[in-house]
Image 1 (cartoon, helix red, strand yellow):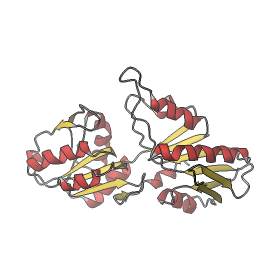
Image 2: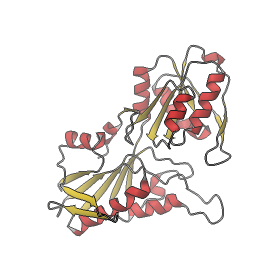
Image 3: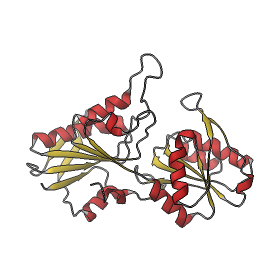
Image 4: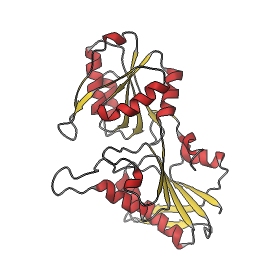
Length: 289
């Protein structure tokens, strides 16, 4: 079965697929009518072909409907299978009903994608109470893990790192990065009283004198977790920390605030396009696509 590509990102992931797998790109037209509705047209035959769509799903409310309409258009025109590579997968935060009347949107979003695609590849989804994606998806899912790529970047670019995890839930992931980077690690205790408020405590850093603190998290959104860690490290008069995140969500003003509070540098993986992208994890597709 011939596979063809639709790259909705025009970024590293699509370029990697075109180059490594020698996969042709499908010609499509996607534009908006004056009233905001989407116009979608497939410009060449997809009958009997498997179509792979690359689309990172930050800003999901804006992107998802157009993505689903594109998928249905492909099937209507004869595509045998449609797969989705979404380097960033949203809606994984609300994985239980915390308060009466709430929706478990992680399950709902998984159902929407499962109803339209044959398979999904993503990178480090934000899972806590859901052990693995297959618990909520009814299609085949595969995950690229950023930890080896982050560890390799740390080894090549940071002298004497000490890896700092933001909370207990990050321990297993932070430990893996630290072990691969041959570095010590510590994990903070974090409390989140509200959606935008985070409080945390940092262990005694005196034994890490001469080390470069590296604060590690999977998603940088409001940045409050890292900002509080930065503030505490500044009070301890240690070297300015380097902040590393997988997904560069960055709420408005978050990047600027993190730098203003004393971050030496902010580094992210290329799952969401951002000026901080310095760690390319698209090579992870080699063994699973």
